[in-house]
Structures are given as structure tokens and as C-alpha cells.
Length: 110
Image (cartoon, rainbow, N blue to C red; front, side, top):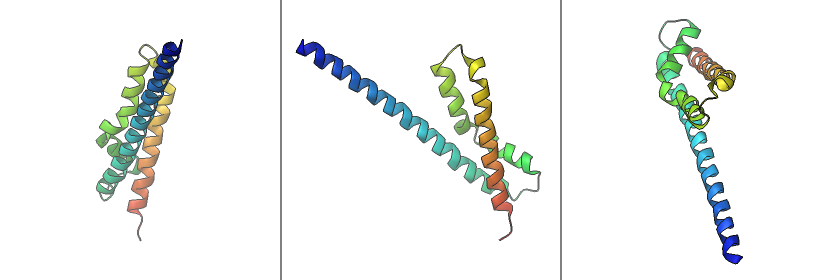
């Protein structure tokens, strides 16, 4: 009985550890995407172009980081891509909004 209880408790702790690792990895990916967007917006902002074009350029340059969410979700839930598409589109819009805002801030005269 005790051995079974110890085994069940160790499985519970292992499951909690893996969830914490997944959450930490997701936070790291989000932080890296935000850092990349800020860094690339500073690079793209001086170029004479439309705000939307500049924001799309920034997001395209950071595709490795912004695509991490998409890759993570599609690998976790294979076969449910159609159900995730609205949330993935929302995440893409948030990345574009952050890029627009950062480009506007950099372009603003001080």
C-alpha cells in the first residue's frame, strides 16, 4: 500500500514538473518574440515605408520566434488545426499590433 502511494505521488510530482517546464518554455518563447519585435522594429523604422508594411516586415523577420506558438500548438494537438486557427490568427494580429506600436514609437520625433 505504501509503495503504491509513493509511486502515485512520484507520478504526480513528475506531471507537475513537466507542466512547469512547458509553461516556462512558452514564457521564454513569448519573451524572445517580443524582444525580436522590438529589436527589428528599431532596425526597420528608419526605412521610408508605410506603417503596415514596416510592421509586416518586422513580424516576417521574427518568424522563427513568432512561429513558435503556432508550432507548439499544432504539435500538441494534431488534427485540430481548424479549431485553433482563430486563436492563431489572433496571436498573429497581436504580433502585428506590437510591431506597429514599436515602429510608431521609434519613428516619433523626440
